[in-house]
Length: 146
Image (cartoon, rainbow, N blue to C red; front, side, top):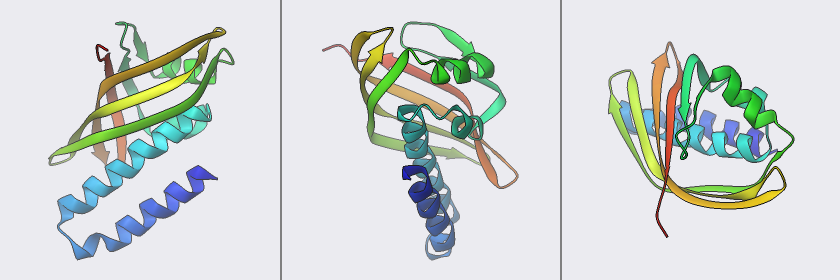
């Protein structure tokens, strides 16, 4: 349901794009994609995430683990991974023609292998515009000290 709402928001932002500058419309699309990403992670929807990441996607986790597209999607679908929330704030979009870097702060909670986690960190997502579609090519997270 949340995914459908975000798709409608994305469509509305694309329609409203004519009201602002082209970069404002692209920034709005990227922010919607970031929120859709979070919803897909919480619902463990690897299929939805597969539609947002490039074939040569690279993920670098807070602990230094590096994953390719296949491993990243398998980790999302892993039944031992049980996120309960994922929120982002302090977002900044930096556009460079057909490339964008989105940075922000995340807070996620849940359990993994039966052990609870509660992480606050920074993230950097790099997106590339392929045709009319933004695809994430790299994601990196770092934990913030408490």
